[in-house]
Length: 162
Image 1 (tube, rainbow, N blue to C red):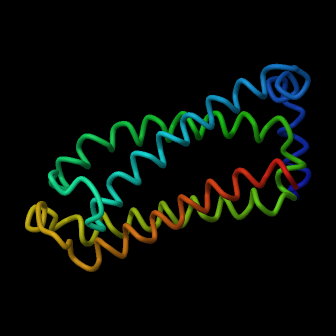
Image 2 (image 1 turned 90 degrees about the horizontal axis):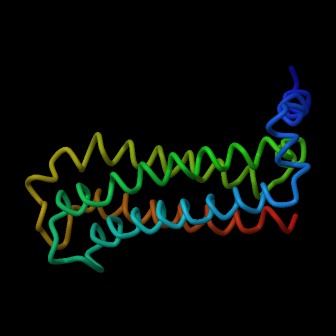
């Protein structure tokens, strides 16, 4: 099945049609999405800025991660569900929207960056937990994470203007 045909099938689902036809459902879902994404990026930025030695110098990386990651994952799940609901309401439009596609690529790159960080530098975080500066690999991961998530916000905002 082609991408446009799949998108049209998604749009025809009853819940997607209800969102598209409602005057208030899409904006309500969008509010939830924006708040959730704010929590995702904010909590990730706290850890990234600590990795860069810019903020939260009084916290160890492991302690900060333990405090922020539950919020990050909960907010990410909420952003994912709300994003899928918004996508479903106008899937044929979104699949052709370049900023939307770029946003998805940036989210994937942010996830890949996180995975690489967790299987490499983070495995030894107990050794450098309170160390400043953090190891180069941790600073690189923090830098790329900030770049990717700022890009997600930028291109996510741009979606509605294209």
